[in-house]
Amino acid sequence: MLVLGLKGSPRKKGNSDYLLGLFLQEAEKRGWETQVVDAAKEGFAPCIGCGNCERKGVCSIADDMPEKFFALVRRADVVVVSVPTYFYGVPAKIKALMDRTQTLWSRKYIFKLKDPGHDFRKGVLMAVGATHGKDLFDGIHLNVKYFLDAAGAKLEESLCYRGMEGRGDMEKHPSVRADMLSLVETILSPFEKRKTWLFACRENAGRSQMSAAFARSLAGDRIQVISAGSQPVDKINPLAVEAMAEKGIDMAFLTPVSLDAALENSRPDLLVTMGCGEACPFIPGCKMVDWDLPDPAGRDLDGVRAIRDEIEKKVKELLNL
Ligand SMILES: Cc1cc2nc3c(=O)[nH]c(=O)nc-3n(C[C@H](O)[C@H](O)[C@H](O)COP(=O)(O)O)c2cc1C
Image (cartoon, rainbow, N blue to C red):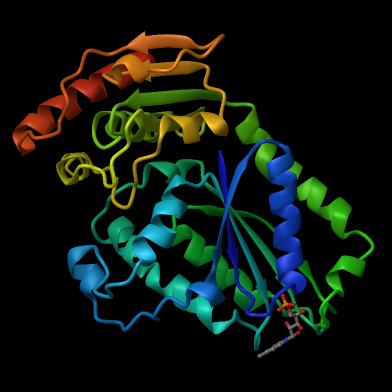
């Protein structure tokens, strides 16, 4: 289970940074994996409005945004955006990151592709501002809500503090720790109650990725689904992405994960293996199922489609659909 934190302030050790740190610390104590994208540090180039993503589903700007942000957001269960107020909006560099998410918006609303995580991924807004006005966070709230929607997450909760100006103000707030504990419990505990299914193959490039995408898509928030490989490769199989897109499911930007990394942060109740051979793990107390499925690597699109259809059938059987 992954919490992705988006750090919006260019100020080091500032107030919003403190809030994000508290959330992530509590998540880690509960056994969650955490990752942070620091927008000011990454400095992704802003959207140039060229329309490439609306025509082709990918951004024309050739930087590492897809690997550094899209790949993480698509793997995340919870996305926490933590920002200071800058002129009733968010700072420029996190706004640039948000605008670049137009690629995910286009894939969702123009290409009608479903990100399998969107039925359960939760979003959280944490914001601070120096003044006290009633409408201080209105702009940020709308901005973050629609950004999260494009990123495949629903804004569930927000925690905003007025009157926070100097570095260190947030730390002195009398209820911040209690507020955070309650927020973390509300957001994370429903995930922790779910059964976890792990789909594993060798490269985590085709079979296990397609299985996990179908399972996520069909099970929604009933089951925590992960996938991994005993010998993960760098990129997932583009033909698997194409074959799944024909079914309306978006696997773009997903990256292979190693079994060791997957098992570090999760205790599966069900392990479905499909050709990870000798390296398939034995997990005490975990039910194991082995699927006899050919490897899509090296096959043409028709070959991959046949495996995809077989996987869809098997996942539906597993879910009793
Ligand atoms: C460029 C800039 C614009 C700001 N605009 C606002 C504003 O519109 N309203 C407000 O209440 N505070 C504003 N502030 C104050 C910050 O929101 C406040 O100091 C906040 O605690 C900074 O958070 P940080 O420590 O996470 O960076 C602004 C600060 C800066 C540097």
